[in-house]
Length: 335
Image (cartoon, rainbow, N blue to C red):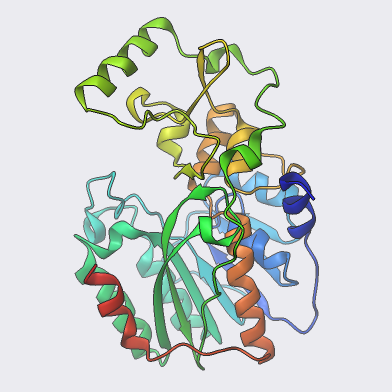
C-alpha cells in the first residue's frame, strides 16, 4: 500500500454509536476532526474562517458552524471537547504575546470545558507555549485541574505517528480518569514517500520562483551560513508546514527544486500530502487560502493516533496508563 492509499483508507469517516459527540473548537478545515471521525466519533466543528469551514463541511460527516467564538457561547451536550486555539500568540516564529494577543482563544476553550463538563478534553498547540509563555500555560493547566481533571501534557512529533513531516506540538489532555498517550509508530515516512508520484505534475506558473527570488535565496543562504537549503529534501521528513512558509516569505518558503534546476513553491496537493490529508479531501477557496488551511491544520493521521487513545478511554478498553499529571514539568521544561 502506498502513502496515498494509506491516508485515503485510514481517514475514511466512520460512525460508532457507542462513542460520544466531539466538539471541535477553532476547527480550521477539520484536520483534527477528521482523525476523530476515522475512529467513529461524530463531530461538530466551530470555525471563523469561511473557506476553512466550507472545506470541513465538504469533506467530513459532521457539520462545521462558521462563527466567531466568544466566552459564554452555548454548545450541544458533548462527551469530548477538542481544539487548537490560534497558535500565533505562542509561536516561536511570532511575537509570543500570549495572553495579550487578541487572537488568544484559551479563555473560550476553558469556558467551553467548564460549561459542558466533558469526560475528556484535548488541546494542541505549538511548542513555543513552553518558553516565553510557560507561566500562562501553567495557568491553563491549573484551571483544568480546578475543574476536576487529571491533566497530562506531552510534546509529540507528528513524524513519529505516520506523518512525513517534522512537526512538534504539545498535546494537553484533561480527563476524569487516567489517560495514556499513544506510543510512537515505527514507520518514519519521508517527503519523497508522500510526493514522488505527484511532484512531476504541472503546477501553476505563479508558484515558480522568479530569477530575482532565486538570487535572493542564494544571498540569504550564503549570509546565514545555511548548511541545509530550505528546498524540500525527499529523503527525510519535511520541515514543519505553516501558513507562512507555504504562502510566501521567500527566505522561509517551502519549495521544491526540479531536475532542470528551477524552484517552485509546493502545490496545494503536495502540501496536503505532507500534512497527511487524503487525496479525496478537497479544499475550498483560493490557492492562498488553501495553503493557509493546510499550514494551520492538525495533521489528520497524527490526530487519528490520538483519537484512537481517546476512543479506548471512552470505551474503557485496556489503556496502559500514564503516571501522575505533574510528570510533564520535568520532562518538558528542563530540556
